[in-house]
Amino acid sequence: MTHHVPPAPRPSPPTPPQQQPPQPPQQPPQQPPPEQPPAAPPESPPARRGRALLVIGILVAFLVVYGLSLFGVHLLSKSAGPLKPPDLNATNDTIVLVRLEKLETVANRLTVKVLVIPEDSMFDKRLDVLKTDTAVRMDPPNDLGDLQYPAGKSPAVVATTIEAHGDPNNWPFDSYSTDTLSSEVLVGQGDARQYIPARVEVTGALDGWDVRVQHVGEASQEADRPDNVIITLHRAKGPLIFDLGICLVLFALPTLAFAVAIQIALGRRKFVPPFVTWFAAMLFAVIPIRNFLPGSPPPGAWIDQVLVIWVLMALVAAMALYMLTWYRQSD
Image 1 (cartoon, one colour):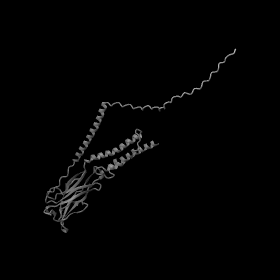
Image 2 (image 1 turned 90 degrees about the horizontal axis):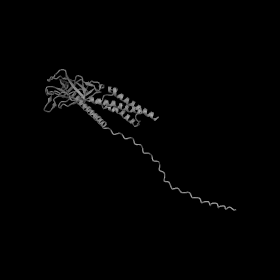
Image 3 (image 1 turned 135 degrees about the vertical axis):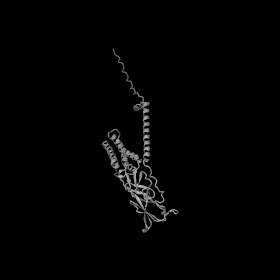
Image 4 (image 1 turned 30 degrees about the vertical axis):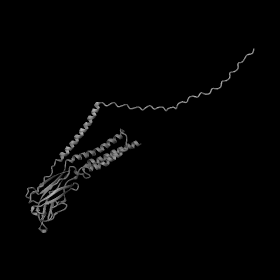
């Protein structure tokens, strides 16, 4: 019996690979949005009210200090009254009128303008001229010697200087005084000249100075006023408040410089290189501020030794501390 062998199965054709659908391009991973800082809680009404009261208080304090300073300047400026008007009414008196012009404290020189007012017998009232040559000789002598007033001309003021004793290094508390100032009038020409006693009168004012005139000696004229005078000048008290303000400004410069330099040196504030120019500006501003003081104290006065030199040294020290911080951070 024969067995029927079944035919082998026909191999199936290979199936083509299935094409996968194109995938969309991959998007870069999205960064999470930055976290927003938590919103500050709304300021409570009491805090706003306290801040407003602080601002108002500072403003009121400033106005009060400003008003008091103005009142102080006005009050101190009235502490010394003006000079009494000179007595020029006596017709038979010969008067030498001295008008104050300027005081040079360092040179101890007082600039004045001198005018002779002769008695009626020496003056032609119709032409307003002198009848004879006249000269004024002052004691102590002035820088021009005898002051000449020629005949046939109306007397004109002559500018000259006299000595005023004082120490400018005591600024702003310095005072200056002249010697006993007297004068005589020489009338005539040649050997016929003769001395005529004269009375000295002082007038005028100096800005920033209180002037006091003391009449001393005997009275040789019809008026009972003594012939000689002593001129004393004290600095006016009004500018002292301005001097104090300038000194406070000078004191504040190194204080602010050290406040900044110490904060940066301790690392509490970020180092900012352009601050070096700020230090240099304050350093070079000291001398102009010092020269802005009323009366311009001479170099080497006590204020330079007590305040100015220490301000300069403190500013240099603050700048050195700032540069040391820069050197440490650069390493």
